[in-house]
Structure formats: C-alpha cells, structure tokens
Image (cartoon, rainbow, N blue to C red; front, side):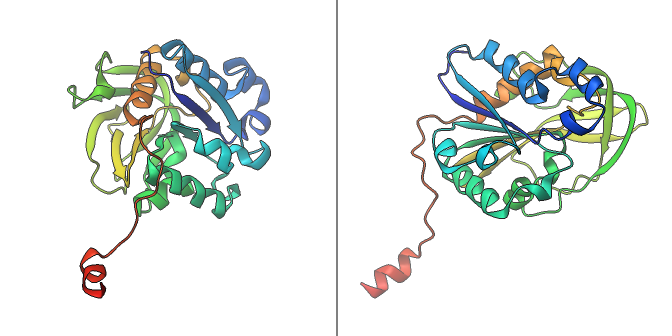
Length: 247
C-alpha cells in the first residue's frame, strides 16, 4: 500500500494507566494506539502516522490537527463522557467534510459514533475470553482484500446482537462466539462526504491488535475510508427551489 496519508490513531489511554498496568504494558508497551500505529506503518511506510490520547493537549483533536488528518482511528471504552461536546462537534464537522473515521471496539458508544449514526448503538456483551470467529460476508469489498475467513481470535470480549445501528452501507464481517452469539463486527457508513468503518475486535484485555489478520483489516479500512484528494468542506444545507423563487 503506497498511499501518502496523514493518519491519527486516537485512544483514550485510560486503561493503560488504570487497568492492571503491568498486564497492559506487557501486551502493549506503547499503548494500544502505539501497536495500531506500528502495524499501519508497515502497510503505509510513506504515511505520516501520529497518536494521541485524552491526556494530549486539546485532547489530541484540535482544529489544526484534524484539518490535516486524512483518517482518524478512534478507540474508546470507559471515558466516552470525558470527551467534550465541542470536540465531538469538531470531529463530526471534519467527517462530514471528508475525513475518514475508523471506529474501534467500544467506540460504538463514543459520542462521535452515536452522533454520526443517530441511534443508541447498544449491544449485548460478555467478557469471558471466548474464541471469536470473524467471517467475511462481502469478499468483494476492498476492506476484505487478502483477509482470511474466518479470522480466528482465540480470546476476545463477546459482542452480540441486537446491535442498534442503522442499516449499514456494507456488511463486511460477521462474528460468531463460543456461546453461540453472532455480531455484525465490520460495517461501513457514509455521512456527508466522509466514510466510516466500524470494526469490533480489540478488547484491551487481549492482544488482538497484534493479530496479523486484524492488522490487515485495519490497514484495508484505512485505505478505504481515506479520501486524501477530497476538498474538506462540510456539505452546505440549502434550498435551491426557495432561493430560485426569492431571486
């Protein structure tokens, strides 16, 4: 993959500090965002890949940063409410204007995701370290290119239906779990000029982001949501018929 992109990997960074730091440091010595960034760099060696967390100045999501970002990857879990509404509105404006968004794991409950989708995005869950099989159901989609089916993840948090999201533009992956549950684990949406890819595998208690096939999915997702030539401008809301009448 040779696209020259500006990629920002954003992570709350809370689990790395508060949830068994020794275990987290063993799996993700540079944080989950660091592991994701390293994996993407191998796929996009010419890309400018940076990371940020809640503790970064401006939450890592200031106007200047977002204006130069082609793709934002967002990992969230326990600190959704700590992201100020004005920051969420800023990110939403850039997504609507053409910035790509890859929402990871519990980012289904992130303010930016629920704001863009307009539903609760609730789901069933259980965390007992069960095996997850990620099945490709739309192999023709670019995000599925070169991905094994199924991806076998030995231990993972279970997410199950009903997943309260709008009908996705593309349903690419469906996961099944040891307990019999299924989940739409890889879906896409379009909002304004922006593209969104949601991918659920990636709980903080397991080394999922070191899985080569998961890394491939993330790299493919970045490539698909990226639109580096897109003129960044939020679509205008107009009424041509009324404007013509008034003229």
